[in-house]
Picture 1 (cartoon, rainbow, N blue to C red):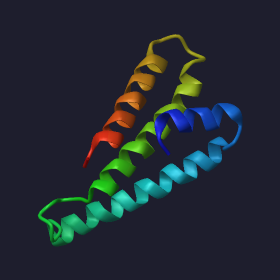
Picture 2 (picture 1 turned 45 degrees about the horizontal axis):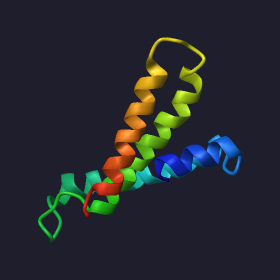
Picture 3 (picture 1 turned 30 degrees about the horizontal axis):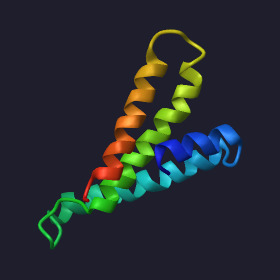
Length: 100
């Protein structure tokens, strides 16, 4: 669900907004489960709070949410669309670089 690919799939119609939202929700639900695990059990055996995959997946899910919202924000000229695009790009870069 990375940012440029997500944007391209949305623009091309390869994936619907519904499909993207479901994928993002699944990623966020896994992150929520990991947050709850951390709250109950503490850090993982490797000493980290969360796995790199969970953190990167959460960043991708948030980037997808930004892209979906940006589509609507473009209709209103208040700077939100640009802010959402910047956040989506930063989250994408983070998800690519994190844990490498």
